[in-house]
Image (tube, rainbow, N blue to C red; front, side):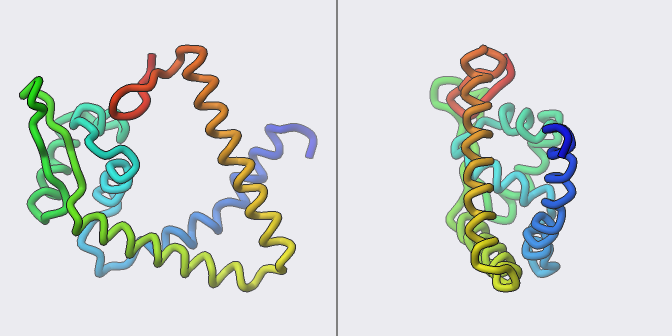
Length: 163
C-alpha cells in the first residue's frame, strides 16, 4: 500500500463481502419491516428516546418523511411516540418490546451468518480480524471525541449533532 488513501480503498472493497453477509441475514422477505424501517429501528435502538426531529436529522430526511415512517412503525406496534412533558411540540420515540425482540432476532441471524463464514477462515485470521475491527472501532470513537473537542459536532441529549 502506498498511502492511507490506498488502504482505505482496499478496506472498502474488502468489507463488501462482510456487509453482504450482514445484509443477507436482514433481507428475509418474511420480515415485517422494510430496509428503511429497519434503519429507523436500529437508530432508535442505539439512541432511545430520540426526538422526531433528531431522527430525521440522523436519517438525513425531512421531518415529514421521518414522521410518516414512525406512523407506520407505530401502527405495526414497533414504536411508541411520547410527547415531551416540557415541550408538547417535541415527540420522543421509543421501541416497543416487539421491536426489541425483532432486532434481537436479526442480531442472532447476523451472528449466525457471520459464524458460517468465520468457520471457513483459519483461526489466526479470525483473531486478526477481531483485533483489526476492534482497533477500527476504537479509532472511530477517538475521531468522534476529536470532532466533539474541536466543536465540529456536539453531544446532545439524543445523540450527536453538527455544531
